[in-house]
Length: 241
Image 1 (cartoon, rainbow, N blue to C red):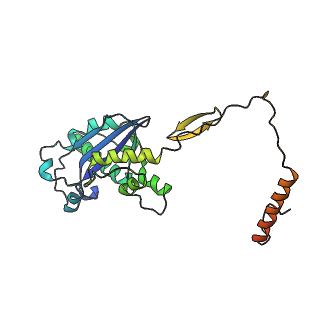
Image 2: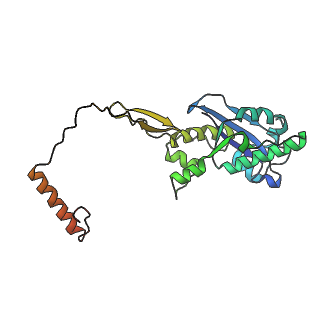
């Protein structure tokens, strides 16, 4: 399966207030391996950047002045992500901004708007982390600490850097056990989770040897059950009728 780990940086928090995307970073995974076929683009938002947002990512309007506008990169970006599964931390934020940008592009070109959910499937790693680690912090920084992933270079947010870190985090979160092979049984992996592929039991195999407990072992077992029954106030289920 082809997966695209995606992150964006923006001029602010809400596209409904006119905020725009200023950076897109994508890392490609095929069969859970990095391919180096990444996508990275800075974008001129054609508007100011909120001071709070700039403190987070450090990207200035002066830096973006000579970068392409969104309308000029939409088709290339859509062709890159089409058909993939998008891996995004707090997906509603990035998907909301991308769909907003697509609507603006459609108005400018008098065409139908692309919709992320129609182009790709989406996995939200924040929702995944909350399910796996309820009641704990599940920010990207917190997950890096939990899964021992080096994010020391992340002094500021950056779309490509965050996508690279999220790719490592996603692989760690969904790695599963490396092998469950027992006695020649093969394993198969679905979405990174290993399961045993059991072989059929041969009808003509030798009978299994049955070893019965001797009287001393039976007496020791019964004594242990009696002790458990006393300590539990008569609630030991193995001594009940």
